[in-house]
Amino acid sequence: QVQLVQSGAEVKKPGASVKVSCKASGYTFTSYYMHWARQAPGQGLEWMGIINPSGGSTSYAQKFQGRVTMTRDTSTSTVYMELSSLRSEDTAVYYCATAGGTTLWFDPWGQGTLVTVSS
Amino acid sequence: QSVLTQPPSVSGAPGQRVTISCTGSSSNIGAGYDVHWYQQLPGTAPKLLIYGNTNRPSGVPDRFSGSKSGTSASLAITGLQAEDEADYYCQSYDSSLGGVVFGGGTKLTVL
Image (cartoon, rainbow over all chains, first blue to last red; front, side, top):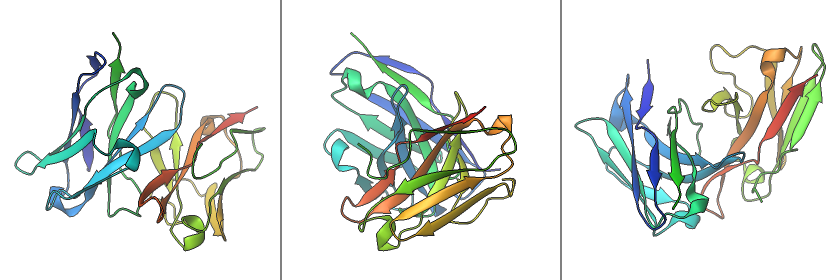
């Protein structure tokens, strides 16, 4: 079955960077886009961007332009999301999720990775 | 402030019917982009509930249904059960922003 497994929780200091991984299995990795979204404690979902694992093209939400980088490794069916210049407001659970395209639904989702930014 | 507007909370007694609205604008739902719905149980990742406005994935009970009209969409849950207590999110695409947008989420309480 299709499964997305994310890397473990991280604790970072303000100004640092974090790189979260999302390993896909159970389907052809290059056939589906991968989205990233986050959820701050007690808050709603926020879309961060999308990567096409086939060619590596990306599109980022305006809010994160210049701070986020999404990459992929087709040899390991893994996508990565790196967020730089971390601040306390970036403390959140970060999710990856597959989709057939930018306007289509997310299914399935990874289990989530908690990133805590604290001095 | 989310681009898609949902009520913060709804509630209903077991067996009752509740609806959750998702209001957008001419650059997202009103532009013809599909609406998708997710259920998020406490401490877990969101799970797809409705896709393409009205379609249920395999395994989702037919107590859940979706609809869309104009710049809004709705999720209806009939025969409420205690296990339905969760947060619900709508999602669409916004052409002005050039990306995915979510509603702010609705907490469903089963009384």
